[in-house]
Image 1 (cartoon, rainbow, N blue to C red):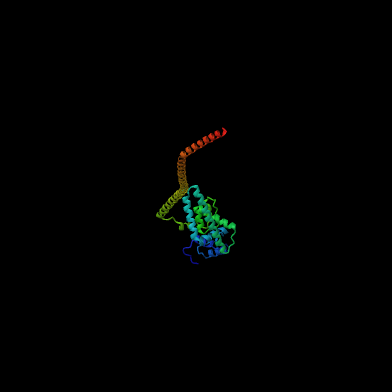
Image 2 (image 1 turned 120 degrees about the horizontal axis):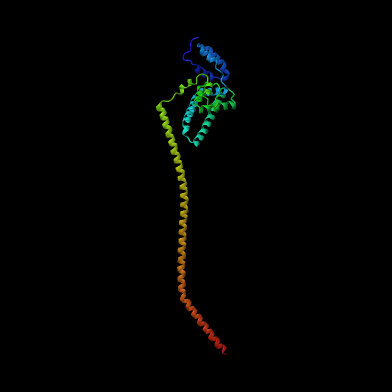
Length: 286
């Protein structure tokens, strides 16, 4: 049999681990028989059948490469940025990360169901744990992106050997697709993150200033309404006072005008009393 050109163990493994689990063993053995390289054929024949959760992740890595790559790149950037974040921002970041991982795990499970596999909640949970590990550990991210997982990953593990043991073939073999960006692009991305951070700070300051301004505007409006009502009340009271003063002046004039007549009237009363007394005296003389 002719030797195959440009074939690698990792490439063969990635193709086999994307097959439905029930087809894996037969496909593995058949592929090993096709290989002219005895050492490579032995390696392929020794491949272990992936656990169901690992196969779901492998399928997702192969069928939804762009979505997974985007999530893993975001995770890498978040790992770099989290040292500069405060507790509140980290808490919000954690919620967003969990929501993203949960959504990806559901998508992966649905993709597997569409291939005719029965996926339980326990399997979806294991897929979620594996993707979560990739969010926190760079080597775990390489393992997930390789599409050659044998078993699911544990996000709580900090042992790099765990990620290596969980992958068929070399973990570094998948690193080519994740090669470092050129230095100028890295600098540009860092500058952009710095600018984004400054923008968030400025937007936060603006929001705070707008809240304070709105509160002062509401207080000013209330005070202005009270002042307007007070001015109106003063005008009403001044008008009332003017009317009372006019009434007082008029009544005083009326009183002064009646003073002379009042004296004359009292004089006539006194004369009339004397006349009555005189008439009574004359009458009493009879």
